[in-house]
Image (cartoon, rainbow, N blue to C red; front, side, top):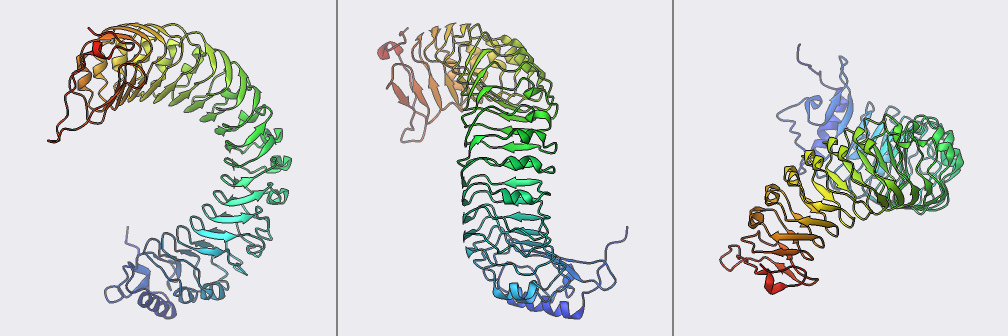
Length: 522
C-alpha cells in the first residue's frame, strides 16, 4: 500500500492554523511550522482525502491550554466537523467561539470535557449540525432551561460530574433525535419529568447520583430503543414499573441506593445483562426464572427485604456476579450454582440460609470472592473448595460449620482473606496453611481449634492481621511481617509488630499461656 499523502489545505486554512500555533506558543502543543509547513500533518489535525484537503477535525486534548481566546480563529475553519478540547485547564468558553462556530453547519462534535469550566451553561444558538456535546467533568452550575433547545441535531449529551441544579432538563433539541442523555453526579432534584421521555430514540439515560425524588414514570416502558437505564444513588421511591420488563432492548438497569418498594418485576430478566437493585426496600420473592436468562452477567439484589429461597432455575452461562446478601432468604444453597462456570463473585452473606455448602461449588473455578458469612450453614468445609485456585476472599464467618479445617485449603494459592471465625471447627490448624503465600488476613477466632500454632505462619510475608483468640491453641510464633496486628486472646489483646531502631523486624515469641484468655499455653 502507498502511504497516505495529504495535499495542503486551502491557503486561508493554512493561514488560520499558523495563527493558532502562534497564539498557543508556550503551551504543550507540539506544532512547529518551520519543520512541517503542512497543517494536515500536524498532531491532532485531520483533513479530508480530497485533492484539495480541508481540515475536518481538530483535537487539542491534553495540551495544558488555559485560554480559549484562540477559538475565534478556529471558527474560521468552515469545514470543521469535530473539535476536541478535553483534558485542559479552560475556565470558560470565549464569546468568539459562540459567535463564530455557530455558523459552521457541518460541526458535529464538541468535546470540552475534563476542564475547569465554571458558571452557568452557555446558550448554544444555531449549531444546527451539532450531534455530540460533551461538557462532563467540569464545575458548571445553575439550571438548564432553554440553552440547548435549538440543537436540532443533538444525539448525545454528556454533562456528568458538574454542579448543575434545578429540574432535569427537557428542552434538548427540537427534532427529538436525542439518543444519549448523561446527567449523573450533579445536583438535579425533583421528579423524573415525563417530558424527557418524549425523546423516543433514547438508548441511554443516566440520572444517577443526583437528588431526584418521586417514582419512575410508567411511560418509561414506551422507550423501545432504551438499552441503559441508570438511576442509582437518588431518593426515588414507589414501585418499579412492570412495563420496564417490556423493553426488549434493555441490557442494563441500575436503580440501587434508592427507596423503592414492592417486588422485583417479573419478566425483567428476559433481555437484561446487568441488574442492580441493591440497597432498596424491595420485598417478596426473587422471580423464579430470574437466573435463567442466558445473557445475564450481573445480578445485585443485596440489602433489600427479599425472602424465600434462591431460585433453582439456572441456565446463564454468562453470569459473573451474583450478590443476594443482607436479605431474609432461607433454604439451602443450590448446588446448581455450579452451572455458572464464569462466576467471579458469589455473595450470599447475612441471610438465613441453612444446610451445607454444596461441594459442587468447587467447579466454579473462576471465583474470586465467596462470601457465605452470617447464615445458619452447617456441615463441614468441602474439600472440593480446594479447586478454587483463583479465589482471593473466603468469608464463612458466623455460621455453624464444624469438623476439621481440611488440608486442601492450602491449595487456594491466590487467597488473600480467610475468615472462618465464629464457627465450630475442631482439630488443629493445618501446617500446610503456610502455603497461602498471598494471605493478608486470617481470622480463625472463636472456634474449637486445638493443638500448636504452626510455626510456619512466620513465612506468610504479606500477613497483616491474624486472629486466633477464643480457641484452645498453644505454642510460639517466630518472625512475622512488619505492621501485623495479632489477636490471640480476648478483646483488647492486640499486638502490633513494629520495627526496631535498626529497621529490622522485631522478633515476637509468644508464650500463649501468659496471655490466657481463650487460648491455653503449651
